[in-house]
Length: 320
Image: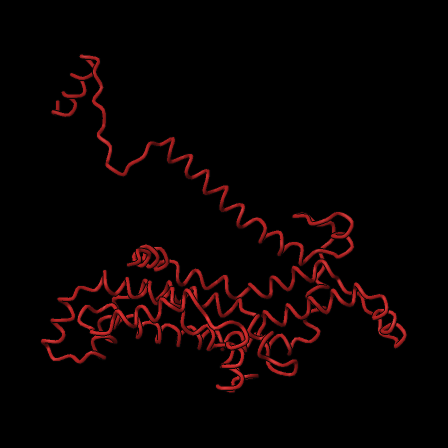
């Protein structure tokens, strides 16, 4: 008989049960179950509305008006997508503008913000306090809407260009502080000193040592910048004239306004009917179809950034 079986038999005979020692961060099974149930419910609250939007976008307009939104529509219909895709070249043009602005803007943002954050994270940089305060000051005060508009239109002459959709969102002071904190707390100074002793210049240290070690925070900031560029419609509203190239979000916003105007204006409908134009606009389902088209590509970005997302947030979250 083994020693373990002997010990178990001895415990049974004495009627005593040895209590297992818990790990410091270990929780009970009941607490673990309750936490899992909470996050299942929270996840369902986040996902179910998105599923409903997709289902309603493929529902029949009349059934939606009569029965309201439903996960089980009486009749499936794709007329809302047919209505939006009648002028599909306009959607393709707007989507290409959004894609270009998102990709180029995110890459330039990461490069510029990382190049700004790295020097002010170094203790041997003599002007680090001045440039840190200069960046922090922009979080508290700004010049206002009119000077902001005049700088881009009168001084930089960027109106009706694609660069005007990139420049205003190019640098975020909040993300610069997160990057600076990551560089200061994660990159050991001895590593930089070792590279200097081996003869590496500063730019080579930054490109070949600092950036590869900073992938979690770069991916996290890149994800936020990607969402900011993709979801932006305000810059197209302010700086792009009606005949210019607008992004996808503003095109969806403008289409929704046009649909609301036509459905709410009997005079406009009568004028179109007098010209022999028969319009049957699916107002309810077309809103959902626009939402699906607008969010469609960006939801797949999360899967590429997910493995870096939590680590980058927690490491760079402590400011100072």
